[in-house]
Length: 171
Image (tube, rainbow, N blue to C red):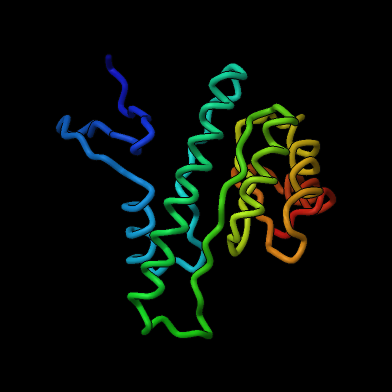
């Protein structure tokens, strides 16, 4: 009660703070919105949890993110087939988002699972404290495909870029 967003395996239902209307966002609708905007970097639908979420919820959210990633990949592949007018010199890249909170085993599992799905690149999602960024980035970049770009999401300070690049992130 009182929540503005409800997460289910189908997607996320948001309740408008303006008029109370409900809106369902799914991996498919998210891909369509990003595609219509003409985004160069499209990010697969994911669930970024609170750093305070317990291990079981982090695992559940990570597993959901993997299922959503596959749905996102399938929808973008359909959009690519249906949009032959997208110039080859300006491709649209789909990035999966590695999750797992502050748990090394979950982060590594997420990197392995998503790394095998064939995305164009990888975003390294949040849900860690500032002190955890370097180690979490290092864990996943040892596993993610080296030939694919790796982008740190949710940075807030210039030194975060330096720490991420030292640990193998490209952007």
